[in-house]
Amino acid sequence: MRDHAELINLLQQGDGASGILQRAIFERYHFPTMFFGSEVESWSYGDGSYTINTKDGLRHLFACRAPHYTTSFDAALTLVPQGYYWHAGEGKTRDEEPLGAASIIAPGTLRTISEAEHPSVIVALCIAALKARAVLEAAGHPHQVNESGADQTKVPS
Image (cartoon, rainbow, N blue to C red):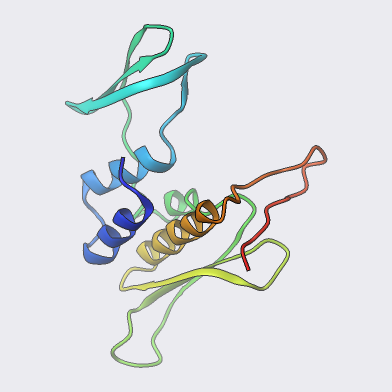
């Protein structure tokens, strides 16, 4: 499985439309850890579907397509950490800067925890979201919710 930095680099370098890149993002952030009530032990991809081996000894065929994260705004938004705010837009103030930009903002604050620029605003949002996930993971602060449903994520300073 690819790490945050590798995926961010691939997004920054390419046009983002690669099926391999879409699948790598899906596998890193949205691949199921449970399948039909059993924990996923391993999986492989081939011929348009996944073969999933679960800890109960069963093998499942999982035919799915990775969301088009880099071409669909809705799919890109699924990468933003739950409870975090986002801002994205297009525009230039200088000829040399990219057209698209995005930032991820900590809940209940105005503090930006990640930002990105890219010729595509959707790809910029993907990059900013993956950077935010990397910051939170590195700081040991995954998204947490208390019993009342209030966000208890501690954002790194």
